Length: 94
Image 1 (cartoon, rainbow, N blue to C red):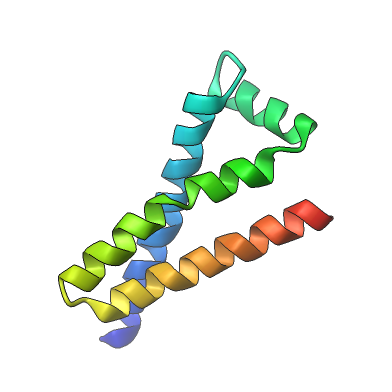
Image 2 (image 1 turned 120 degrees about the vertical axis):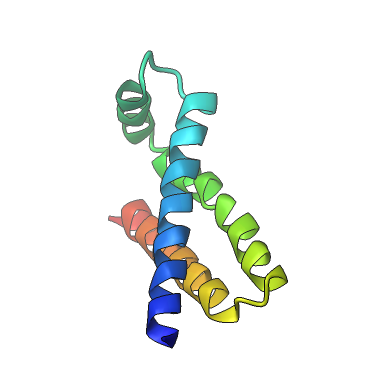
């Protein structure tokens, strides 16, 4: 049961990061579409900054789960945030 709750939190955290990335691409992107904005961000070297800004939605999911006393799901969101941070570090330095 705990593993299922952890996986649900992990999936929600990853989805929140993806939705946040898309939202930042729409708001701050300079292209005509999301893919254009993504290509421009990659070429200009600002993709990691946009990914980090997109992970801010995880903060809301984390505190929502804590407020509802769903600590295991909150732990899954925290793990998803750490995964996104590691991916960001790898992208930045590779």
